[in-house]
Each structure stands twice: as structure tokens, then as C-alpha cells.
Length: 306
View 1 (cartoon, one colour):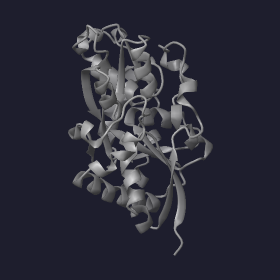
View 2: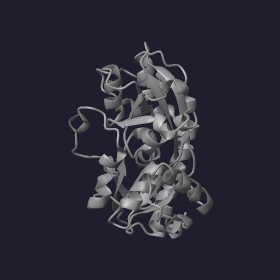
View 3: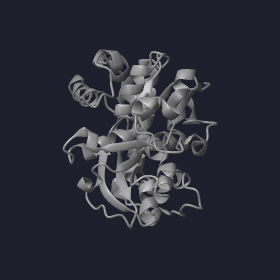
View 4: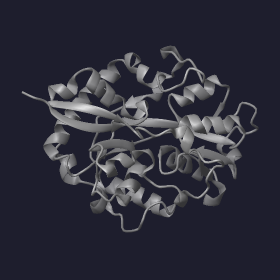
């Protein structure tokens, strides 16, 4: 029987590792699917899209970022941080919906240069922290630092772009701190940076209406198998993260990583209660429209199939 062909986006390997593993191990094929993994921002160059100076107003940066391909019909599913997925779903013109939590429970760390006087989150009051607006680095920075400041205005998340570009701005002194995920946390430590704070956060899967409940259930079964495989031993698959780092920045090996940073779980549906908690937080930071309630953003029917 011929496999059903479909295209699914993958971004940084730490977020999409179960998709790489499911393809490598043949789990998608076992479910009857020939899945092409499409790199986020395919054909674009992050280094050419970095602002000359960090951008301080998130309203000046489009929410789609490197995931605009779903709006162009280039793929049917992708995953990113849950806050960003909620915002992009709100802004979608293709009726996409959040269908579940993603498998990756990621962590990001805010780092400073080794010679920085900063040592604790409170030291970053009013200091610029390089992020990618409307992505995990943006929201987790607000979350980590918000409780350490007396007002929201003391948190200065500024847009730079991808993790490599954020670290470059930090090295050049254009920002005072940067939020990065793996493998860039390990790169930053190798370069002598100090970790000021670090936090785990969830992500979400988003799909177009083309992804029916039966298709998502099949993809989800493959991802669950991949999660089990990763949790048996992640080391054979760290190659997907290592290859993201240019050799002139760092030469990483499996032994360089702190393995407890990597957490992968079976995807699960959003509950109305947890969505409403996120909704209150996002509207409180003026990052989401008041009308973007649970029924507008989440596809309960698709998620239930899994």
C-alpha cells in the first residue's frame, strides 16, 4: 500500500526531536505516512534578517516569525512554544488551530557574559535581554523576570532573532543578556557565559484544517513511540542538535550536554482551565486580543482523536 505523503515543519531540533526520531526509525511509515520534514524558514537567512539595533516594541515584529510557511500552505503542522502558538493562531488567516501540547518540554536560560556584574535575576532590572519576539525566548523571559521586578516596565526583552544571533549580540555588547535554548545553552557555557536563571516550559502543536482527527491520531502514535525511544537513550539523537552549531562557534560532542535538560512526554490535549490561565497571563502583558478565547484557538475534536 502506498504511503500517504504529507509535509510537517520542524524548527530547532530540541523542539522537534521526536519528529526526527519518528522519521529515522520508520514510525511514520508504520502508520502509513511518508512525512517530509520541512525546515522552519526554509530559504531564509537569519543573519540577513537581524536588526541593526535590538527592537524594543513587540508590535513592530510579526507574530509568525519563522513559521509563516503554514500561512502559505507549505506544510500542515508545526510546533513551537505554547504562548507563541496561541498568538499565531489568533493571527492566522488559514483557520489553523492549536490541537495539543507538544512532546518537548523545553528549557531556556538567560545568560550574560562572563565579565558581567549580573548574578541573579534582580540584577537584570532595566537591562536588555535578547529574545525572538513572539517565540519561546520572549515569553519565558517575561515569565522568569516578571516576578523579580516591581513593574512590567523593568523587564526589557528586546528582539534580535535566532539564538546564534542573540549570542553574537551579547558578545558584541549590543545587549546585556540573552535567552537561549539547547544546544545554545551549552554553547554559551562553553564560551564562558554565566547562567542567571533557567526555566522549563511547554509548547503546542498547530495544524491546518487538512489535518483530520484520524491523521493526527496516526502521527501522534508515531510521536509517542519516538518519545519512548528518546527516553530510553537520547544520546544517539543529540546529533540533530550538534549539527545546528557552526564549527566556528563551538565543536560540541554528546558529553558536553547536561542530559536532565531534555524532557519529552506524550502530547496531550489542552484543557479549558489551563488555556484560560494562559489567556489571562498573555492579555495581562498585552500579547493577545481579549476575544481570543478557548473555542477560537483550540480544536478539541482533533486533539480528542489522539
